[in-house]
Image 1 (cartoon, rainbow, N blue to C red):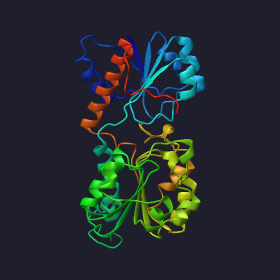
Image 2 (cartoon, helix red, strand yellow; image 1 turned 60 degrees about the horizontal axis):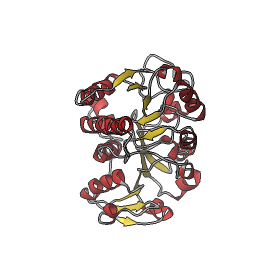
Image 3 (tube, rainbow, N blue to C red; image 1 turned 90 degrees about the vertical axis):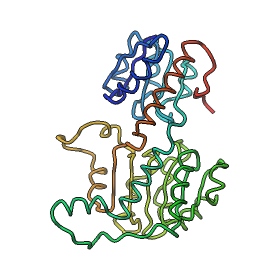
Length: 332
């Protein structure tokens, strides 16, 4: 079976090859550095399946093109599937499977890294000390013990984040339409308005659906405590970036940490250091001293990468053997 692996960086190849070598009959993996789009779908010519990541686009047009090429499966190397048109995939008979959970602690720990860095200004202190500046002005933080942390999305990653924050001595609030037994023993389940109005830190840990797109917007930002911190390590479109910029300018929002960005596909996972970045919204974000942006690296640990590779091959084995796959994605 031939598989075209899109958005394949060297680290992807390393972990996928490591997993493939353990297969009784290895799969034929064809690596493509390009991300999947209507323009690059032809790279899957002669392949049975494609393997994609978060910023690859498998909308109706791409799926129609892949279907004409004889591709019959879409393997996602991630949990989210908002970049795949599931209705069209089902209509065309595609096998679609994902990696539903991979080292939730990896993303949770990165969330805490963003919180701690923004709170104690260690990124700014690092640069100061390297220049011989040991002044403490502008580096004042707060003690996390006794503060209230609100978690939007209390699944595996949200609950892992809650465990760490509870260990810091925070009072943890959670909002999720679906109850989580893991979270219930860690924090208090409340409605969204209550969470936003009471939390010193708000952190997002939910998949992206049309229903929660821009869940953080001008109205919900207005419900947050003045000076509160907002963290997003889930999906960029959960936040209305323009509204966040206004909240930062008015100083109502105290700090912002994001590992994801709504228009990240043109930027993240590429070296743009020699380019002029034409995204004015992103460039405006970068002017704020209380904003910290990382390039979608929350998942990026050895353990998570191995789990992604292992589950991807588990899904491939189900496809090749025609057996039921626990990780298939179907329309609701």
